[in-house]
Amino acid sequence: MPLISRSDCELNAYDRTFFVVDVTFAYDPGDFPGGGWFGAITNCCRVSADDDRVSIRLEAWDDVPEEQREPWADVASGVFRSETGEICAAELYTDVQDGFLILGEPGRDWHVRAHTRTDDEADPREEFLFQFWPASTTEKPSF
Image 1 (cartoon, rainbow, N blue to C red):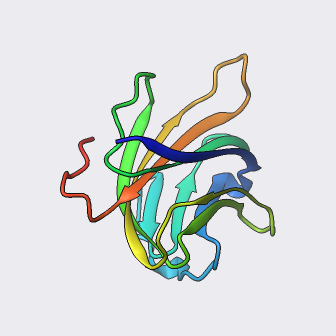
Image 2: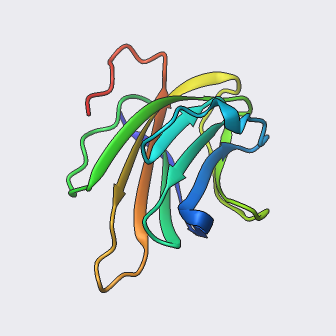
Image 3: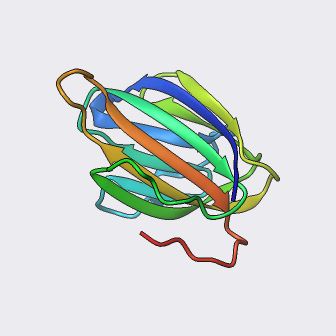
């Protein structure tokens, strides 16, 4: 279950919100389920943050990722459909996009596991980790 690729970036979380999106930006914001800090729909993950500036890591795996060794405050999951097979992180209200990552084959579903932890006094950014792997994987994610 090797890590295929990863991308790191930082974004502003206007209104304490940012997105992880398919590069098409083709999604309907009305499709998000209510509640929670994380929601995944076709071509988009909506994320709520506690800070105004966030540090983001996107990872593509070929199978279910290994468990994280570092502690995370919260973990959520979902299924994300990527029309192009390429994603990025995006700010709310702006055209800022960063952290571009190729997941793989276009037009397929991906499991996504989202991790968050709040900053400490030495680092003013909240950290997020998003791990993607093919939804055709027979093993179900364990959270």
